[in-house]
Image (cartoon, rainbow, N blue to C red; front, side, top):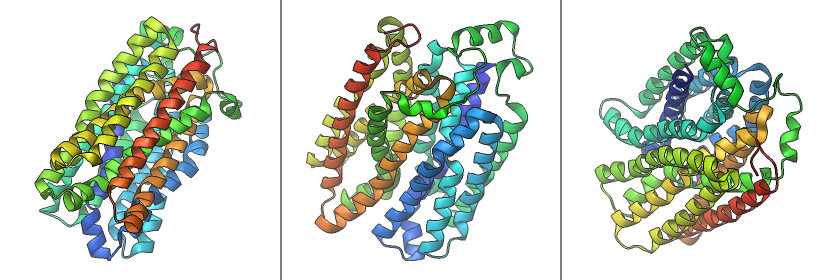
Length: 415
């Protein structure tokens, strides 16, 4: 039964990225139709992440107290409504407000999944399960550009948003009817599986969240936030400006752009699965410091090097490959990052995840706006890529610090 629950969360991850990546792929059509500048479109991209960040922790605290079943259903229904409302935008301000409300609605979705995994998944399986979850998201990111380009041949960009919104409403209804927050409350879950989950999930009896502010007293929370801000900075470059960079700056055809816009997400999906498996294996053998933090630090070293090479490479296809490789290695860390949020947050796992993810939204908010201004001021598309490489370097240092802190803190019997 727990794997059926995971399958539902993977489908949730899929539709979150379906809606997020759609707006980046259609940015050119939207800008032309609504007569928007690059800077204005940058603010539209960032309106989502600003709202997402503002409402992330309050929504997660609600889920920790009342459960993921009603909160996730509300989240998906809300964001689906504003995905469809995007089709009604008539100018810059209207689009900005709609995308802000879209972000407010989606806030808390992934922290709620962290809460689901804290209740349903034994500790030793969490990295792999997180890998499957993020693979669903990134597979959607890989397939969405091609799907959107195909749909655009038959309908306007407005109707594409309507179609994607309808998918979300169907998912929300199914989730609310089918899911239960506790394994023992879900019909069809065997007594053996309930006993295994409750014995191995690492929650104390009577695990209702009480003091969610305790999350901010965890020593590793600050470096974890810094690392995830760098991660999301790169993610939002890939899902917002990468199509424009490849087509307008690197001179790719639309067909080539679709392939190389999807490539980072395909690599990410493989990295999610392999990274999730490896972090569990290393944690079992060497403990959390090496299994979570050590793996993440090494991954970001590779990402920083690859992202530095991307703007220095004259060949557009090799440059795009470096970007995809850098992005993929940052995604290799997600199983470790989101699993350690559960292990550090315990009863407040959703709030811990939300705290990290809120910092990610800060990076995601700044990414498209800073890129737009850097390009406008310096007329140089290479500069934003060097900035991203430096941020990946900061993530390396952050994960080294997390590893040191974890080694000096007893956690689930590991040091």
